[in-house]
Length: 386
Ligand SMILES: Cc1cc2nc3c(=O)[nH]c(=O)nc-3n(C[C@H](O)[C@H](O)[C@H](O)COP(=O)(O)OP(=O)(O)OC[C@H]3O[C@@H](n4cnc5c(N)ncnc54)[C@H](O)[C@@H]3O)c2cc1C
Image 1 (spheres, protein in one colour):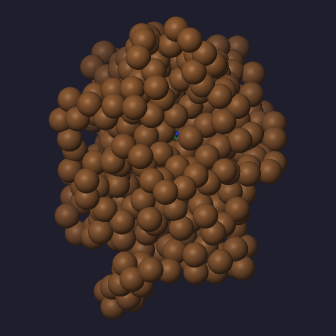
Image 2 (cartoon, helix red, strand yellow):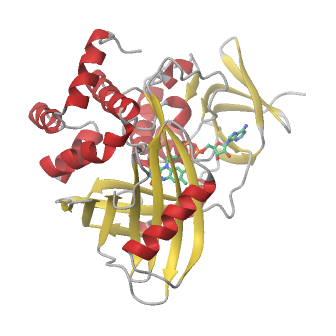
Image 3 (cartoon, protein in one colour):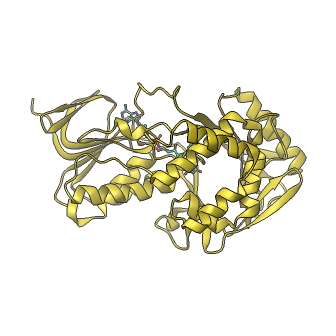
């Protein structure tokens, strides 16, 4: 039987796959090309909350749940108010994002969305065969968001961002819905970088998330204990209901995921290294990287590796090294960052759009014995990037 043929196949209708199909669908250049999006699940009920920052109006404004112009960072001895200037911190539900993109691409007759489980992909001459449960598909180029099985993080700096979040609803009005909390270190897990993150959706509804940046995962009950303690002792809330729960484990590593990309098989999303190593954010990176891919495709490029600039690679690596070797120091490190720099400069830096003087200022602000040790370790192990 002849295999169905497509110009491009995107494996995974998750964050990166949806961003990519949306960017491709918006460009007339691809109107005549047959494109397939495959996912093993239809995600009708999945509800995760993604947040990100951007200046002013953005591409997803019509479907965001909430945005904030004010934020704060809290540690044991002080509160730092974050002045976002032109930036807004925004929250979007994964299900809204999914429905929005699927609906908008369904207007394009050249794009198909199929539920199928991809088992394998292989190259044959200048084409790629996608072997899936129902059938095999053929294409010129595949974008694959499945994380490869043969990833060995042992020789790389690697911790995990892992968290459990509850959307809680309180009886009384308990939240200042104008201000989100990026990190609150008042409920600590000793010797670890662990904090609470709070996104108030309204005066009586908020996402409260207990997050670790650590090497090892913890048992589910640990997050529950910390969440309950935070809600009771810090938020002073006794009566509430949990209306949604989310759990996530995100790699924070300098592992060169992009090396799994080969000619005509481009790894995307977490599998392609689109997660910012020092923060675990990837929603906005997926939007930016999808645009980069579209530009490359239009030029006819078939080996598409999307990487950070070298200077950001090195800075992420040093930052991760501090957290990996001195995990208890995270609170101090992030408090130096937020205390000594304006939020808009931090956001520009994390978006890899900073200027030289802001970068110097940020590096200087993190100056501490552990930072210097990591910096020197990095110098001695060689400034080589992967
Ligand atoms: C609970 C949670 C909250 C997060 N919050 C934020 C946040 O606030 N801000 C932020 O920037 N980032 C956040 N992240 C991180 C990040 O945005 C996600 O991890 C992101 O979803 C990664 O995108 P992806 O496309 O690589 O993977 P995914 O979104 O996981 O998509 C992969 C897709 O591939 C499909 N798939 C897998 N295997 C196959 C197969 N064999 N065949 C077919 N399909 C397959 C899956 O069904 C899935 O739909 C969060 C992550 C989680 C888990």
